[in-house]
Length: 254
Image (cartoon, rainbow, N blue to C red):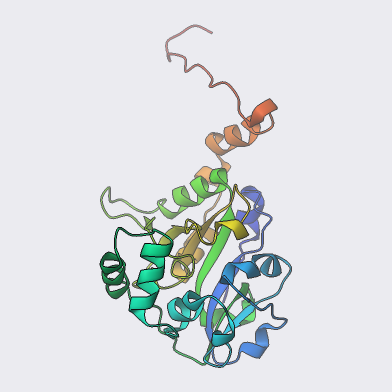
């Protein structure tokens, strides 16, 4: 059963709908659809309006972004060497095509289990097919989500949150090695997708176990303590920030 994120979203003032990455046998259950004609993130505004994007062998070739089908469905419509040359030489994303080719070879795409991948607003009745959930948030909110992801982590070297170089498409699912582990990826950092997102927005994508963990944060957690209250109060000040308060010595007479 899908947990209810309403309390978390309310406390963090997140108004954008959460976006799920589904591996489903029946894409029609996610209608209505918005169609990507170029970058898959050209659908972002449609997702915010309740629409979903359907990717499968039948329709992925119609999208002008080869990465959408490759990273999400393991469907290569363009030879790897050609992609590497375009990204490295024409767009300058790596120092050479060989480096880009090696990077592509080292990071496999997501391999779907069912007929289609659907990206769009959460559907509670389809929770069994959900792979990841993406929060589209501002820096204050992403800092809180990172804190939430670390809330039950005791290790100083094994972190549940990563932020790695990659495509926006690949950060939705391919970046995750184990969907049964509570992990998260800071995304929205692909410069090719940035024109489709607001300038103050990044992505925080989590596996289903991490989503459940975040939704379980209760009144004992930082969500209800002074640090977050101070952030919200600071944003009410002119310029969106306030002067830090002096920390008084505990023996100082007030």
